[in-house]
Image (cartoon, rainbow, N blue to C red; front, side, top):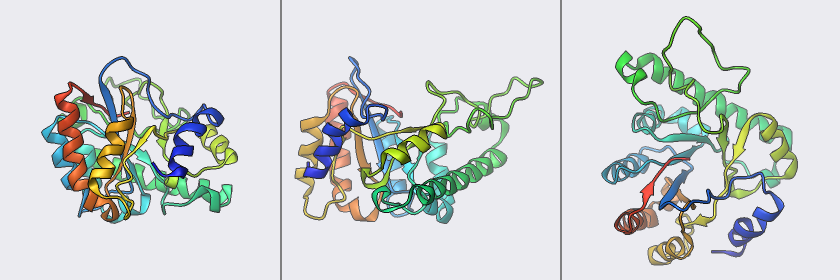
Length: 254
């Protein structure tokens, strides 16, 4: 990994222990994550490939892409993957004031919620009530309650933490921003393995080596469903899914 990614994935765990870096496990599980989508050129291909391996993943979506490509976003939901927030405009936290950073995240949150609501309104009753697996939750104060109904919609479906997920673009976030987001009921998700599929100086073989060298049970692995990453992703993602499936791994959403 590059020096900055090595620092983020190692020293970061010491200085920011409240952030989620991996999920320690004795079971053969990998948590695949995809940043920067959704986009029509790449995300549907990713979804199709994941479906072949019965794999679930977590998609950290840019709010502006959700706004521009709502049909692609709804494909992620329909396949039962989990949604995380990746800001509205892919902001670098180190170069953005905390107030502007938080507002940009909340703008993305509003966009994601709007599209989730559209999904629920458009869905037939059978789709709403069957095993919802995407949980972009409202904060406890905002969650609707209805004592007259036993039906649980995907927006109300509890998770193990009851928290919303956020990943900072570039992995760059300040302590003040962390505190503000945690006060907003966000769980900040980092990683212990990054494929560097977005890096134009990396070839697919090098990216694949990064994943295989550092992945272990419970690892959170970063890919990107973006045009910049697609040249590497279309080669390494099938290899990762095949390699770890043959080793008996499952792929789960966070």
